[in-house]
Length: 525
Image (cartoon, rainbow, N blue to C red):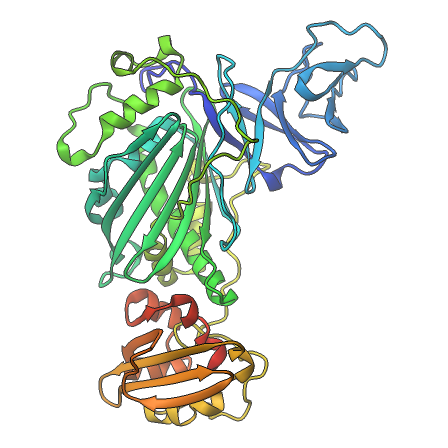
C-alpha cells in the first residue's frame, strides 16, 4: 500500500477472506469494501459464492443494494441488466444488443471450511491452490471479526517470526525457533516453542510448554497449530487479514479444538480457548495501529528471521511497487501456479494457538469478561453490520468428576450417597458407580495417584463390561490421574471444578487423554 506508514505500493496479491459463509445466504447479496473498491458478494441458486465489482457498468447502480440473484447470475436493480458467470452481461430486458464490453470485474472465489475467500491480483494473475483443511476430529470454528484496524497484512503476520515480542506483549518466555523457516513459493512455514505464563490468563502459578506451527499462504491466510505439551491438548486457529484500503484491514479469526470424545468437556474447552484467543490476540492492536513500517530496521539476532520473512513477502506486490529494500533483495518472480485439482490444495494440518494455556485459563474469567473482549467499545472490535463476532455459548454444566464431569449419564446407578467424606469411602462405592453400558468394547486400566493425608494409589481395570478394583500401582495403566486426595474428594462432591483443576495444574492426567474423558461416563459422581 502506498503512503508513509506502509510503502508497499498497493494491496498484495493473494487469497483474502471477504465474508463468513453464514453471512451469505443462498440467493442473497451483500456489499463489502475491500482492496480500495466496493464489492458485491452473492450466492447463486447452486450455493456457489461469487464476488464482483459492486457498480453496474451501465449507469452505476450498486448491485448489493437491491440486486436480485437469478440462478447463478445477478440482475441490476436500476435497469435490469443481468450479469452471469464471469461477469459478462447476458441479458438486457429492453434490447437484444448487448455491448461487448458490458461486464463486471469478478474474482476467483473459494469457500473453505466456512470462510469465503476471493483471490485479488492487480496484474490479473492466476490464483494458487490453498492448503487443504482436514476438518475431521475438530470442532466447528467459532469466529470473531475485528473491523477497520489501522495496519497492513504484512505487519500482522510479521509477528509469526518476531520472537522478541512474545515476552513484552504476550507474557511468554524462552521463545525460540525450532528450525529455519521454510519458504516455498507462496507458502511460509515456521515452528517455535516457548513457555507461556499462566499470569496472562489469571493463573500466575501455572506454566505451560507450548509448541506452535504456523503456515502462511500469501499475506491473507494463516493456519496455526498449537500443542500444549505438558497437558497434551491441541487446538487450531485460522487467521485472515483483508485490506479495506491503504490504511485499514479487517481481521477474522476462527478457533477450533480437537474433539476429546466428551461433548460437554469439548464444548467447555472450545469456549475457553475462544475467549482467551480474543483477549490475547488483541494485545497487539495498539502497537499495530500506531507503529510505522521501517524499511531498514535495526534487527538483532534475538528478534527472529524478520529479514527472511520480508524477502518472502516481496513476491506478493507488483514488482515496481515493492519497497526499495525488497526490490534489491527479491529474486526473479516465479510463475504463478495454476489451480491444481480444484481450489483446495496441498497439505498443512497445523492446529490452533496458545489455546490450552490461554483457553483453559480463561475459565477464571467470567463469561461476561470474555464477551467484553469481543464486544469492547473499541471501534476496531465492532463487527460489520452483516458479519458478527460469534458469541460464547452458555457455560457447560459444572464438572464433578475426573478430569471433567457433569450430569449422570443414562444407565448410572441411582442409589449413591449424596457426598463422600474420604478417598476410602469413594473407592468403597466405585463398583456401585460403575456403568457397564459405557464400557462396551473397552479393555483399559485406570489409575488414581492421590497424594496427601487419606490418599494412596488405586487402580481399576475395565474389561468386557466388568470392573476389577485394586490397591497400588498397575504396570499396564493407560490413564494415570494425579491429584491431592482432599482435592479429589472435593471434585467428586462437585465442590471443585474438575476442568479448572486440570487447567491450573492441581489435577494432572498422564497417558491417553481421550480415554481419560471416558472416566466421567464410567464412574459418574
